[in-house]
Image (cartoon, rainbow, N blue to C red; front, side, top):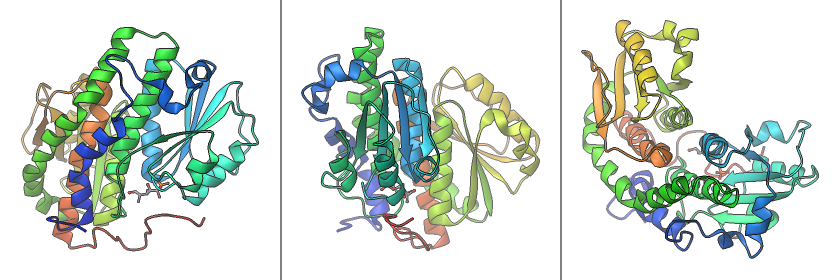
Length: 365
Ligand code: M6R
């Protein structure tokens, strides 16, 4: 039932504060994460992990890409991420004590499931499923499970499943940091930030009104570029995927630093450039990339922190987000991009919940 909403996608976007709160329920202590959520011996077994491999498809793969930044920086463990359809057909080299993480909303995606089955013969320490469906094949077959509690996701475009996957992955990162005795201030800061997320996400949903205003210009374009840096690069990828999927506008994401290495040649007044610009250590670098775009007449749309000093030249549209703690920022910046694709699709009149050629769950290769 869509209730008061016009589409399941919009309903599911608005369900994110509750979905995140549900996913976190019972998983956090005062200033630490409750590792027992993973099972009785998790604490000792987590200590043995020295490497992480992540496999997934589509949006779930993007969640894995964000997690790589977190895991390497905060837990200090090497992490590799791969689309399941590639991983399952190649000979992987698995270092000792590696954990395999398979991420899937449905838990029935053929390639992800096959990747997990393949991994079971490759000498991993253990496998963990991060999944939204408790009774799914993926959850049944993995050694450990971390359930996202997003509730049923009907819209083909994944929204609340993605942000809750990120929440589960940040939780997992914090758990790994904790058992490896990493800085306690970082662990408690993550816990605090996770607890504050539902309210923050609620606040960011109010941007919808402004996003609606810019959707009309956007809808007349045939291409778009999405830029980000660090963990916001995969968020840019997710924004581009959403736009392609439901509005049928060709969109590509680039790590902002790659702009000069090719894509800048595409930029002119017909190429909107969406940037994800939180106030982090990479802002200054991003800013100079944006100046390049502006100098070539590109239409810039910046989703930026209210504290960020982005130099706003003529023709740029600036949408402010509240300041957020660095770890949770990729989660928060996902929301305006979901709303952007939704509003553009509405203008274009596409079938938002059931985009052409796509199925909700890809159970065949
Ligand atoms: O159920 P899964 O998370 O395994 O699905 C993976 C992809 O098929 C899925 O994320 C797809 O990319 C979405 N339609 C994107 O919105």
